[in-house]
Length: 281
Image (cartoon, rainbow, N blue to C red; front, side, top):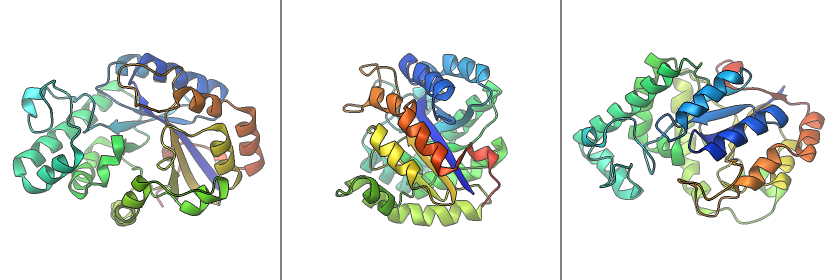
């Protein structure tokens, strides 16, 4: 059986993202969204999710770049002078490894975001992390230790098969997938060992912010059996606060609502679903 999860990350980041999630779910192939619980448009995103009972919603744990759930004064090692989460990922990652006080603050922020999601009343479909920061072994360990108490049953492992990408668009892989790949292999074993649902493959890393119609249709056309997640970043427009430079937000929304993509899905025989629709594997 082919099962496909199509996820929008950064749900709650901005009104433009929320609007795109609704459009792509109602009129396209989007089946899930990952909520940033402390982002500026999180409350409208939660209200929207309640009006879309078929949309599977997960927690997009945010430990870098954006807004924390805790007051910045409570997590000084995680935030910068503006109260936002740090962006110096190498130094930040080393501090998490080497300093117990930083690890305690990371655990506190993770717990606060799980608490915030629980307070929404939404069913927790899955968990993933902004910028895949859960590839950090210490962060992953904290998520596994804390998430169980909040009903976490599935966790994204960004293991992207290069052969599927090459079949769609032969090109050199970017640096990010090459760095992530060995860590993802270790992560998969650990997450499965914890009894959580893991997709057989996750696509979106190499083409982050550029999951165009041709790419999305091409990936769906060659889906192998098993559970696949394709994640994307749709929005009705770019230029909003927190938008990533160079991301093709509108193009990704167009792809999600494309008749070409819908046709590829129909021909594949894959069933759209969320992580919560799948038993642990």
